[in-house]
Image 1 (cartoon, rainbow, N blue to C red):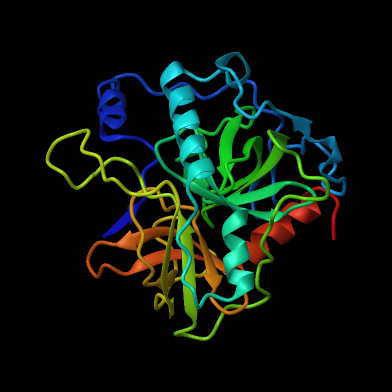
Image 2 (image 1 turned 90 degrees about the vertical axis):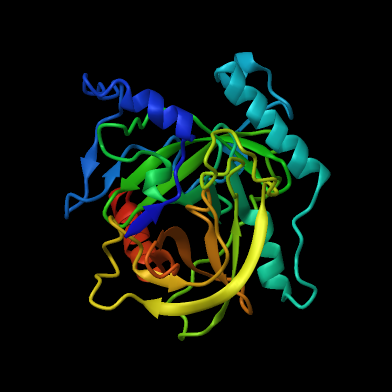
Length: 313
C-alpha cells in the first residue's frame, strides 16, 4: 500500500539483497544515544551550542577535493555534478507566487552524496536542517550518528552536516551544519514552521529533489531527465482517517496532491501564501495515488522534544 522515496538505486538494493545471509553490522563509534521520554527519538550531543550562531561553522572550499569529502569517487562526482546544475540553473517559480513562498526555495537542500533526498533549513542561525528519518537511516541498525552528510542549498552552496536527532516513528530527522562552502555573514536562508495545520484545500508548494533514475522502467539505469530541484504546486488534503498524526512510520498521515517522485522524501510542503512550513513529503499511497507526508503537529512535537533534550525552551 505505502511507498517511501528510496535513497538507493535498484542496483544497490540488489547488492544488499545478495548479502542477506549475514546480518548487516551495526555501525560503531556513535556518540552516546539519549532516548527521549517516549524512547522514540534518538539524539546526540550537538556539534555546537544550538544557541550559538553560524560563526562557529567551518569554511569549505567551493569545490572541495575528494580528500576533504572522503567520499567514494562515484559519490564525489555526483556531488560536483549536482552543484554544477544548481549554480548554473534556477528553479522555475510561478510568476504569481508570493515572495515568502518564493524565498523559501533558497532554504531547500538536496542530498549531494546520494541519488536523491531533500531537506530544509529551519534555523538559519544554528544551521539546523529538517528531513525524513528514512533519508538518514531505514532503521536503528543502519543509523550512524558520526556520519558526515553532504548537502547542497538551492544556490549550490555546499554544506556538511551530521544527524543530531532521529525519530523513526514520526519519520523525522534533524541535521546540524558543521561546515559550509560559503558561510553566511548572518545566517543561512531558513523557513519558519507554521504554528498549526492549514485548513483543508490550502494551496501548497513542494520543493524537492526528484531522483535521476527511473524506478518505473523495466531496465536499470534509465534516466528521468528531471531537474536537480523542482517546484510543484497542489493543495493540502487533510489527514488520513483513523491515523495518528504523530505516527508516520508506515506511511505519512498528511495528504497532499503536489507532484512528487522518488527522492522527494524530506521535501518541504509550504503554504503558498505565507511560505510557512506545514509538513514534509514522505511517501505515497499506491492504491489511491495520494501523496503523503509528515504533518506540522509531528514536526512541532519532534522539535519540542529535541529542544528540551539540549536544554532549550
